[in-house]
Amino acid sequence: MNSLIPHPTDFAHASRTHGQAHVARVMIHAFRLIEATGHRDDASRLWGAVYLHDLARTHDGFCEVHGRDAVLRVNESTDLQDRLASHGVASDDPAMLLAVMMHCLPDDHAALAKPMWPVLSMLKDATGLDRVRTGDLERSYLRSEAAKGMVEFAQALYSQTRRIKEGPNHFTEVLKVAEKILGKPVPIPALVLGPVAGKAGKGAKGAKGAKGAAPVPAPVKGAKGAAPVTVAKGKAAPVPAPAGKTKGAAPAPAGVRAAAGRTPAKTAAAAVDKSKARRRSTTTR
Image 1 (cartoon, helix red, strand yellow):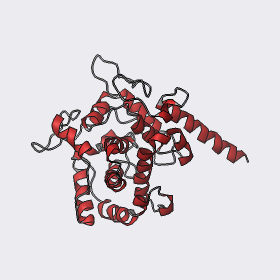
Image 2 (image 1 turned 90 degrees about the vertical axis):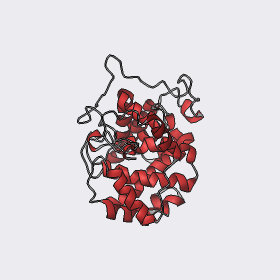
Image 3 (image 1 turned 45 degrees about the vertical axis):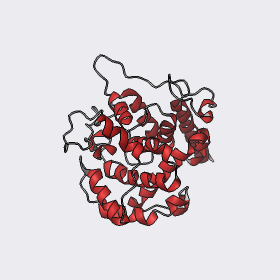
Image 4 (image 1 turned 60 degrees about the horizontal axis):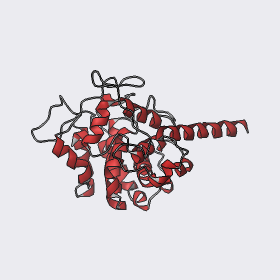
């Protein structure tokens, strides 16, 4: 169960604002949104997007590139690729990657990922609900009615878990509190848990835990600092093929193929550049 979120040392920037505690709460919100919206087929994609979204942050301030940097890190880390696979999602899944890259960009860029909107919107709402930690959550900014109905729960979850110590057992501790608040189990999708039970937590070698329990993932090597890489000895880190061209994979949604032949990384990079240009223009005026 604790392998559902990253270890504190996996983050490029040690933070209580955007680190393991934040991801644990966002993961709870994401699981509840999947159940409330009925998007159960997107469960593994959303889990992967939540897991990755803040791993590459280098500070706690305003940032529009850490989503893109997280995807680049996945491309370079066989360890992260194995972790994603162990929970049922391919490391080059277009919906997951675009959600990660665009979660820190304004919604107007979401037009580039229209077929992927369910995963992106749920990720944005799940992270948005945890803005209670900074005191600036606006209910009207949430995208779904389901998310708007979870604001009070989000506040209670933050208030009752903010002092829980981060570490290998953090998620189970947060989960206990969430279920106490709700008075019922948090609906963790079987798509997320199933592969772990069958593969005994591939990618978590060396982690100790109770017999039969999902092991805690080992920290990604080189997580401290910029562009950390973990590569199997003697092998180059695989780079996912452009959307729609992965051998044996389902074709990418039309919206991704239509982006002038761009890979997800190039699509997001273009969105970042457009956002920066708009801000410079606004500043000039």
